[in-house]
Image (cartoon, rainbow, N blue to C red; front, side, top):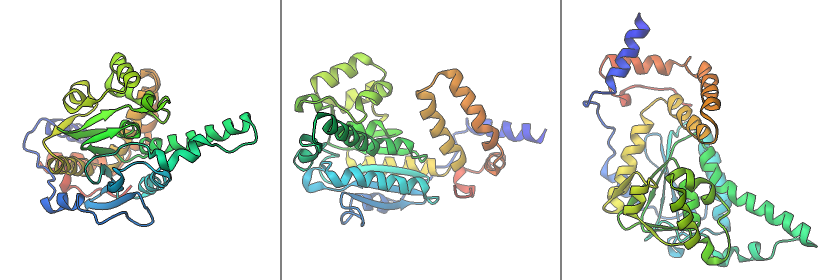
Length: 315
């Protein structure tokens, strides 16, 4: 009977409009857009902690329009591998420094690796090229593999590799001046690090995906919102970063067992049948339901407390 009462309280609380928000301070929002430079040992990324349990990863090559150089491809893997293991972090925000989110791959910096693969013959050069492409793919797959939800905030241009990046994130926000472009066909190649695989599952319209990928036309913020690429559009970068931080704080206030389990199962269900996903979910929750977080959350709901008032153990 006690469990039923607690469960009923949890369900009932979902319909109450009186739940408080874990609002960030304006100073934290401004600090997110005023980083002094890359965070050592990184040279292309700035990492900060603007709020409790929130990690902010900023693409930081503003003088190069955040073009993705060789350092970026390896640093993203190192950064998100660390975040995945960081028990202090519960949610991640990704944004870009400077005037735009990213101009995509740094062609000048990457040309040698891309155009002159090592090897004594075609077979060996092809083998090494495949290994290089797989390495680049991991740069964005690591975001998807990270159990912490990732909110990406896009302002200005998001070109080429930028689309690969944002489609690997869990929640996408943008400003009114944002635009997106699958640019690869314009430089003589097929997008090969995630866009062609993830974008169709993000926006749902195969026809629109084909149009964008085959013509490299720009997708502006209003159309990005209507097709589901982004969930919210903000007037400017400052309001977007405030919205991203508020959203991240809301997620961080919940049980990390519940949040990370939700992300992992959402990603799994995207790539598997309903039957397979339900079986995976049952196996997952046969242990995860035995957490004290469930009892704490139910008790808080009965006492009409907001999630931010509940102290959950680190995960």
